[in-house]
Length: 368
Image (cartoon, rainbow, N blue to C red; front, side):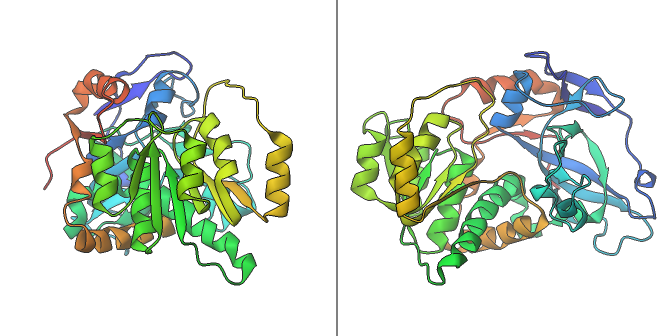
């Protein structure tokens, strides 16, 4: 079967690879699930892996199948699978367990191991292929009513995790009712985080470079968020006007914005870092001022990576809520479809060059 892959460590090596079709027997104890891939989203992680910034092939392979944002349909299940059945629409988590305590209790996205396993990213093949096999623990059902936006399940799970973890951390305060939030970055992750916060009734400001009018601005304003272009307004000055912020969700991929964000929090505020910065950038920062501000203001900053199944399930609930509150909003994300795995070059070109793209995704097969 076909697959889109890269050679880790070799820049711009994206190519069409061949794999054997997997079998449910690859998972022990009759717990295998065979899934036909329908759509796969691609993002900055795939672009950075193709640029050889990170990523490693699974043992026994000299290439890595990329793509970690999956949507598919169950084709076959093992005799001891009761959670799923053929015809179910599904998404899949990205991280796979290692050996730490957190891995053993199902919180593999919080592993303390130095070596980690992520489908499509590190040491495990991804989903940009025709079929894959996994076990039910890592497969999440998607209601048929949400199948047109199922490919957004993985980025939504990351937004859910970051925001839920922020609330969990702030339980230390006994009483915490955030009123103002900021999102830095208006890509899919930032927009989905804005959606989650707006569904909670929070005032949201989305910061992004591109001046309006543009599609990202339209998306933010359609859910009642404020859009501010950092090409037109200094970020820190705008943050003083619309902040300070009780929650700031950082999703730009820019370490400079991440560090500037530290200076925009309200007292008792929390900064969620989601940017994967694979470069070697260096900055000068006001370290003493930031440290003093965090100490005297009881502020928190934490990093978050991909999510386990709980956050996928929460994402599906908020998708259903959003479809009621903002009909059609989620479908407007899906701007750049690529038909077929063989068009991998077009996929990567749109991902790297089309600045207007909201979401590039590959249609592996027709939607049932």
